[in-house]
Amino acid sequence: AQTVTQSQPEMSVQEAETVTLSCTYDTSESDYYLFWYKQPPSRQMILVIRQEAYKQQNATENRFSVNFQKAAKSFSLKISDSQLGDAAMYFCAYRTVYGMDSNYQLIWGAGTKLIIKP
Amino acid sequence: GAVVSQHPSWVICKSGTSVKIECRSLDFQATTMFWYRQFPKQSLMLMATSNEGSKATYEQGVEKDKFLINHASLTLSTLTVTSAHPEDSSFYICSARARRVDTGELFFGEGSRLTVL
Image (cartoon, rainbow over all chains, first blue to last red; front, side):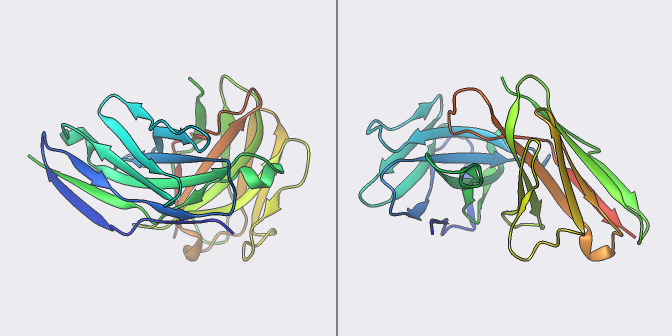
């Protein structure tokens, strides 16, 4: 079974600086999706960035980028120029590509609370 | 973008009553919907997977008779907490997979906070 591990329960960063959130996963599959979701105090889950395992190029979305290391099964999220609005819980998640509908569930990490210091 | 609407966003009820939470995909057809429960400061715990027109698949340890899930159409799934008790108080979130080309992403509702007195 796949697992996702986020080893940092909490991280803090000064506003405008850069922070990296760690995520490792375990799988025997060769093709899959990886995600970073943000959950602000409103509790609405928001997709931050998505990576397809077959793509070697790291995904980027404006100030958000990932360092995807497939062999190491690592998927870290870098947030540049941190803003107060980035404060939230960040969850790393894994999803298989193929299979039955029940397999399309997301496998979640425990989450990292990101604090932005003004 | 794909929008999932979930309501009520919060509900308070007396112990022993039943509460229904709706999850609607507003601008797409959802082949599969997932229901999660989230405790404070914890990750999401999958409760069940539902497909339109068929019975939901429950995760181990989730009581089927307590948490009734109905996925009557491609745009609506409901979670009914029957005979709710204080230990059922939690944050419940639904998510949906679009029927169109699979991009891998799941789309989330806003969540529903249930408080059972």
